[in-house]
Amino acid sequence: MRDEDEILRYDKMVEGALRGVVRHAIDEVVEHGLPGDHHFYITFMTDYPGVRIPDYLRDRYPGEMTIVLQYQFYDLAVDAEKMQVTLSFNNVPEKLVIPLGAISIFADPSVNFALQFQPIGEVVDEDGLPIDEDDFEDGQSKSDVAGKKSDGKTGEVVSLDQFRKKD
Image (cartoon, rainbow, N blue to C red):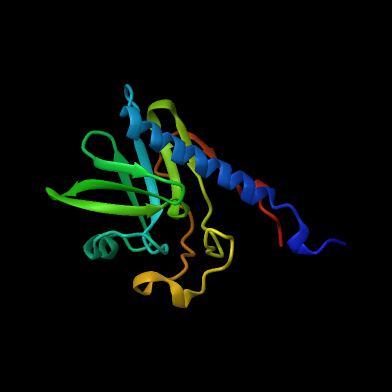
């Protein structure tokens, strides 16, 4: 019998590849703008380590928040670990920094496409090593918030549960 450390983690490989789709889509928008009717709904965990949003938004949206990238957004950028964007809340521009690992839902309703990610049970650094809760910024903790429930919109939701290792 193989030790768990020796098992290929296809579930993590698939999730990483699908998060790469999110990064690539955002990067396309950075480079070329939103084509046609495309727009993104991005739901993310507000208490995920590395999420930087104003305190009043974190208070208003404890656990999870959805943003829309459609008409008025500025300074959109993405790299291998995070995205950032400036959005207006009550006519006040606010810069949001969202690690890609914090994203629980990415949807483009214009083409009936959505990806749903399960919360990451163990937060890891870029080397795949577990991050101790004492190392989290601003008193943040691991999120065990479940993915947002359906809002009645139709779309192709890809759940990674079927690929996850069963304990």
